[in-house]
Image (cartoon, rainbow, N blue to C red; front, top):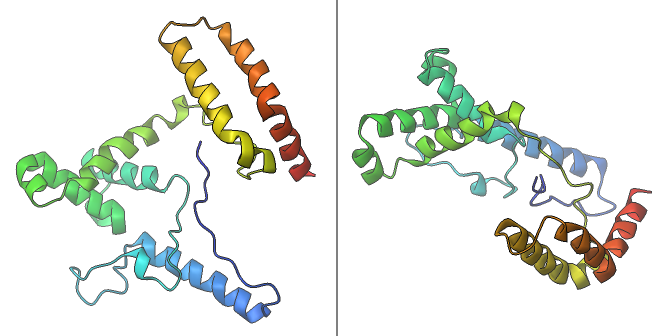
Length: 198
């Protein structure tokens, strides 16, 4: 699984407790607004909304946010929920899904296929969650050796896996790959990550 965090808000060292508290409250407020796509703030439903216009230009969401909203929209499609139970993106996606189902050409011309795509793809991921083994990295940190040797290690990984997948190498080549990976700096990276845990 990819890193769950793509950006960070940093508060200057030595800032007062009031500043720290204000930052957290603002982020919580932005999260709530984003969940309903700004509907609670809009004078008109057609008024534009984007999280990029918030005081902190940081996207805040749950890890499985898209899947949950897509499943909610699918529940309405399948008659398990009422449309009135949807709000924010889930409602927008449901409406987009319905529009594309009724007239895909018109939805495409109106640039209204994104919600349909989310419902189809993220909905499928949500439905199959029990059949997936999501493996999270032990650490999302970067180490000194990663900065200098990661490109070489990635190249080795890509080339080895491609050869195994297309039949140029047997599955036994994986053991040799592990030895090479460790020798080219992988074992140093593992040691550095272990040191970070302590």
